[in-house]
Length: 124
Image 1 (cartoon, rainbow, N blue to C red):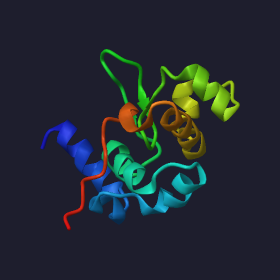
Image 2 (cartoon, rainbow, N blue to C red; image 1 turned 90 degrees about the horizontal axis):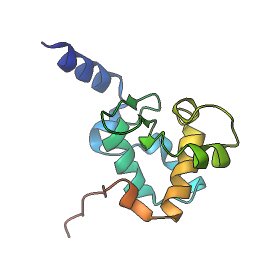
Image 3 (cartoon, helix red, strand yellow; image 1 turned 180 degrees about the vertical axis):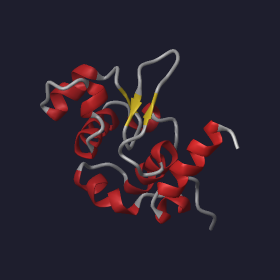
Image 4 (cartoon, rainbow, N blue to C red; image 1 turned 45 degrees about the vertical axis):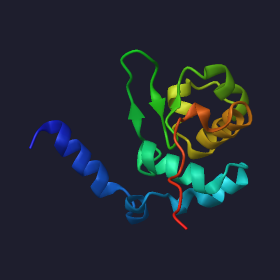
């Protein structure tokens, strides 16, 4: 097993059981609190971080993607305003509250296009 495969397997083992079903029910009350569409954002959260708030994805051509919804650290001004913090965005966005506050701002100013992911359509 390669180191990368081992890391992915370890991450999935740590993920809550609900994450394996394509949603993050433990975070859904907070999604409601911040006015985010629960079904869509629960799926995006699962897809982006497997419901783990500490996930950081280091991009080659962009700044880090951070936290539950993998928000780009390039949103530093928005992060500082929405989270009322002086911390670097890479640190502030690790907080689930801050991550969802910034997500709420982004959703209000561009919708789900910031994530390019929506929940799969249910068959009738």
